[in-house]
Length: 206
Image (tube, rainbow, N blue to C red):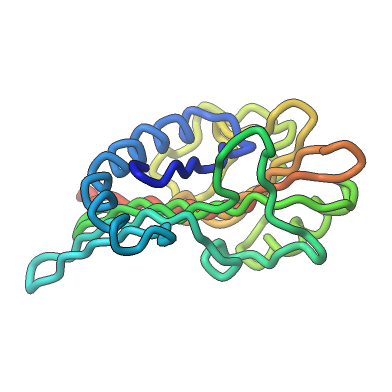
């Protein structure tokens, strides 16, 4: 983001879906950069940018923010956890990014946290928290998906998503509205990320 030197945290999840999301969000940053330069002179500490267009036949908008809340990600913060920031990198521990129009939409909310508790204890906590959104998928070592899976189904699958080496990954929700938790060991403690991903496109006639 121009003029702010803010970098967003890299998800613990490794997948083609995240790569595509990153490409889309890079385009969003470019769209917002000129407006951010103008805002910097007036609000140097502001880390948000948003614009919306509404009318009888139009509903479109863009949001780029280095702030996010537990409510926005749809999951509680693990007791005693604190925001995680790599001391060697100038990156934000949160991101709230969205782009939408009348027939499409994409939203990504990320919180990167750390705890002194073990990865297993943090994982158990979030497996219970995710259950409110339906069956919880353990994508740490997922079985290969059957080739006959219906791509049009709203049923959530692990797909290409997987944790970094030594980590754990859990998902719940639907394909359009996914809640994801990535857990990684950090010495005797844990680094974890809470993600909410919403993606909708124009529905094609059956």
